[in-house]
Length: 90
Image (spheres, helix red, strand yellow):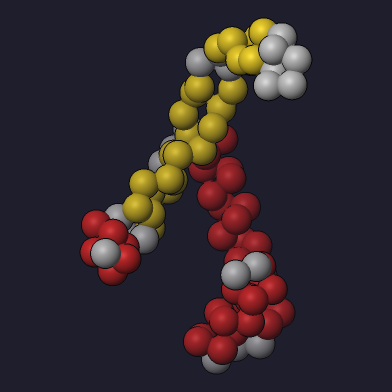
């Protein structure tokens, strides 16, 4: 499902027009990003917990040349599905 399909589904399920659903989805994305920047977790009960984590620097290898590369440390996003979602999928 891409963003446009998601917007259409939200609009249909909530019985609002696509412009309203687009504003809500954009607000959700901005809110999640702002909270992750502040090192806060975002918990959506029954769906997912989104958090920021630090990945350590490490050495990788270019598969074509075999050259060893230094991969710098960076922030990554972690997703942990809720028990409700896990039960629904399994």
